[in-house]
Amino acid sequence: MHLNQDINLADVKICSRCIYDERVSAISFDEQGVCNYCRQVESLAQQYGTGNSDGIAKFNTIINEIKAAGKGKKYDCVVGVSGGTDSSYMVYLAINWGLRPLAVHYDNTWNSSIATQNIRKVLTALNVDLYTHVINNKEADDIFRSFFFANVAEIEASTDLALAETMYRAAYKFGVKYVLEGHSFITEGITPVGRNYFDGKYIQAIHKQFGRLPMKSYPLMTFARFLWWSSVARIKKIRPFWYLEYSKEGARAFLEKEFGWKYYGGHHLENRMTAFYHGVYLPQKFKTDLRNNTLSALVRNGKKSREEAWAEYNTPPTVEVELVEYVKKRLELSDAEYLRIMNQPPKSWHDYPTYKKRFELLRPLFAVLAKANLVPMSFFLKYCFSAKENPK
Image (cartoon, rainbow, N blue to C red; front, side, top):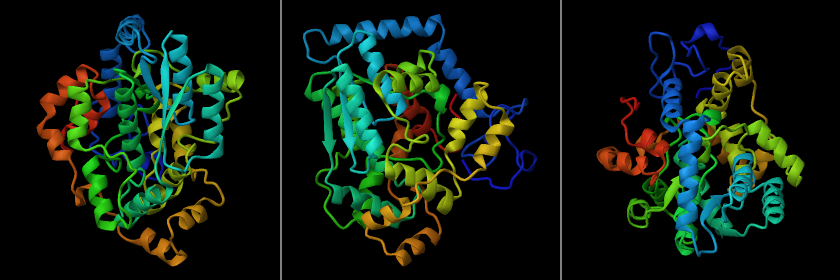
């Protein structure tokens, strides 16, 4: 996860299979020099039958369950959309599988114009309805600003959690029991918690301490709401690419040809705050670069050599020329204020209230919910174990 400019492969202990190195959160290496995250991907592929006949059979069963549960309803599943590759392709696949999806979007008001057009092009062509929750733009900026002043890495945490809450709300409103998500551990891995943590208590605590505006339009997912969605409403989270073979490159080419969809220049660059988070904020303030998730996946899948991936990892990320000025203007930061915060010592989610200990204490419950697809398996693996434990 760390930015490693001018560090050679020989200078740090690095996984013999990917490019995760010894500074990645909770990493360990076996006698073959393979990291626990590569082994986790192997274990998940075996568990879900990813890309083989077992996985296809399991997923076909799920498709039949979705159709049965949605009989007589306008929609039988919800698909979150961002304008990115995975979610755009997921909407197409849902139609191709004979499902009746409702597209759901959380608009944090920082979308790029390309992402907005991508959503419109795909949904119009497929005749899919869109449910959008738009947060008040001043409120969105105030939450982002709060995280910036808190000196923590997860400046984008509010967006990730809000999308999950918005999808639950849309599903419940229309009586839908299934949410489809475009995540693939094969193409993205399972990101170690490290500097990538979020929950409702964390967001609420930081905003309470550093925010200036009341939180009114933001769809906050509290612990009680999370349990209600998963245990009472019993809305299932399904990740088709955990079962099926998936090529992000192939999906992108298909979308471009079929829908006039446009690539936005890089992973996670469809939103300007996300682009700032990945390209500026993490690398400059925290010496952290999350590109090694995707690059390590490419190495595991034989699409890049370790040397090629390491070289790319050590190349500065692509950043829009006016991006930092745009962020400063929206967050109402002077040049001096921006530099002061960027140069302050980093803090972490350990320094603020979270639900993390509660998740760990309730691990047996979440294990059952994860196996039933009522919470994402990635949530269970990342959030329900202490930093000293390595989930299998």
